[in-house]
Image 1 (cartoon, one colour):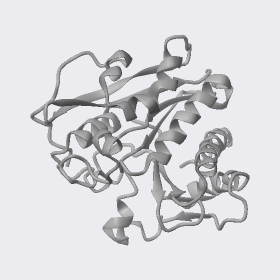
Image 2 (image 1 turned 90 degrees about the vertical axis):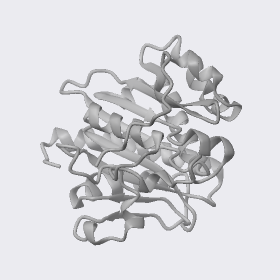
Image 3 (image 1 turned 90 degrees about the horizontal axis):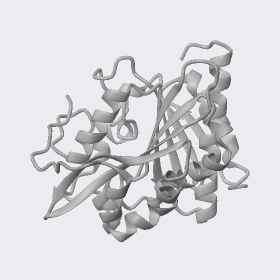
Image 4 (image 1 turned 30 degrees about the vertical axis):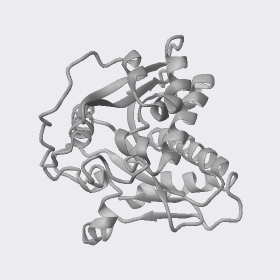
Length: 279
């Protein structure tokens, strides 16, 4: 069941300039990207929607990086970070990824990457896990939620028909990176190479890739919350991976390890398509 349309939506142009009215923490994170947008041939900035909370307007930013043509159909990949406002690591890694792609766009050859660095804009500003209503957004998708953030993000998932979706979360009780998938093929072809890519930035840690294909629907709700596409509303359903970032790792390892994993996923997925495997 899709989220309910919020009653307090704000109607105004959704563009990069409008993001300048957002709180300082949001502006600081996004400034490097907004500085690039004006002169970039590959990067577009804006927001997917905005809503009103206590007379303040909040936006959910979206950046689209259009990689060079890859020779086949363009792959639409959605990367979502910041569903929990107290997990800034994924948001920072996503900003770093887009900056690196701007300088080396061939890494995104064949992809249009839709990046959502701050999915919970209020939680991000005040550094709380939940949103203004006290809801954990990770548990709100496809359940008829009344939360505006969920409404906008579900709309993106439904309208853009992503080929793949990646969510970035911080793991409080892990010493290394973790990648979860819903498919054994994805585990071997994408998750395991992504994990290997992180080892250069977090040596000596215990790194883990898991497939939950066999017992996926028997998992407790807490496990299902890591995935954004568990619904019959999306047809066809995109492939999905969840990258868990170790909370207590050094910040450079968190950021560079996540970026390394994401780049490896881009490369590995191209290779998977090139040999004609069916996801």
